[in-house]
Structures are given as structure tokens and as C-alpha cells.
Length: 259
Image (cartoon, rainbow, N blue to C red; front, side):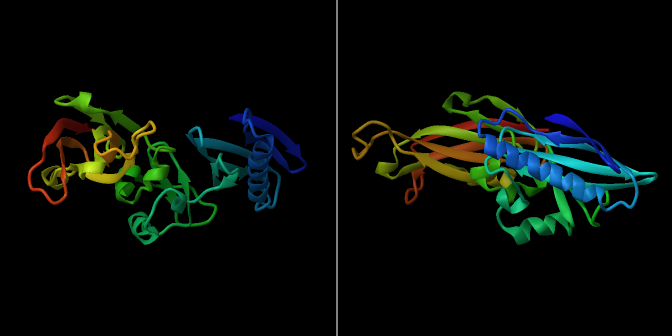
């Protein structure tokens, strides 16, 4: 993130600016949004003001800054959350499903700023973002297709059998396991793990590669994404079985230790 100095009559200071994006039009669009929001904020003050910013989130495809405009003892704030893939501002519903659900957790807000560990909110326009809600509290609403853009995702395989994985509450674990879906078998989280506090965030299946994908028994990959919203030690057990059968033909276990 670059800082661009500005000195435009009553508005002085620095504003954020991005560089190095391969799509030049996208880069211009993003910088245009940042500049526009900074000037909009500054114009809310009647006198000469100083503009600055703090960056809260810096990921490859999404970032967040909080713009500040100050004159005397008065400071106004405005968060700008940018989706680098579209060049536009993004909102929580771009990353979380069940809008009513996550809004209940946030308990009323004017707007939000995305951070490294959670969401910052405020109740009044131009005020500070004084409330913080960790991503762990919003875990059950995560849109799994977008989660990796701003959440840490730990990737493990069958090789993690019997080991302990250390994570932070709210981070995700993607478990990749060989699976023959064409025979009816699939991996699933055991009910006792869910009862202990392990949340299944989502699942997907990668079709087997090669030309003969229709052969019964061709090996594909199950991907199970899990997490927990609290600290503690959680035994994670996965079963490989058919839905209609009682007993699994294989299994996997490891310890999830969340801080």
C-alpha cells in the first residue's frame, strides 16, 4: 500500500494508493474509489483538515483501510473495504451467508471495517469503529467459497493421522482425503466431534483426473472444511462410509488445539 500526499486547498495529508495490479483499469478504479471516499470524508468538515488512514486488512484479493479527516479536536472516520478482483467496495454479505444471522451477532451497526482477526463496527456515522467481533463468532456464517480470501486456512491430509494441529479460534482447517464417491463412499465428521465443538463449515469433491472418470472406483478427493469458535482441545474424528451403512470402512483422527 502506497501513501499519496495531497495538498488541495483546505484538504491536506496522505491517502492510500495501490500499485502493481496487472489490470491497469482495475488499479485506476480502486485508486479512484479511495480518493473519492477520502475527499467525501474531508468535505464533511467546515475548515481546513488533515487526511490520513490506517490499514486494517491486507490480503491478496481484499484489503481494508480506515480513512481519517481531522481538524482541531474533531476527527471523522470512514472504512473502505475493497475487493481487488472487482475493483469495487465489498460488504459482509459478499463473504458471509445468512444476513439476518450475522447481523444478530453484530448487534446493530452503521457500517464495518474488515480486520485481520475480525470485524470492526460502529453505531454512528463518522464515529470510531469501537466494537470488535472476532471471525470466530461469525464462523458458522462463512461462505466457504470466499473464506480463504481473508481467513487463515490450514491444509492437511491423511498424513496428519494421530497428530495435533495448533490453530487460532476462527481459523479454518481444510482436510483433503482420497475418496471413491462413485461407489457411494464419502468422508464425514463424526457426530461426537461436532458435539465437542468442531464445526463443519463446508464440503466439496474433486473429480478424479484422467480420461476414465466414469470407472466405478476411480479415486477422487473429498475436501472437508472445519473450524471452532472457541479455545480448547478438540478430538477430530472422520469416518469413511456410505450414508445408508452404520459402520465406516476407514477413519482418521487428529487433535485440533485452538488458542
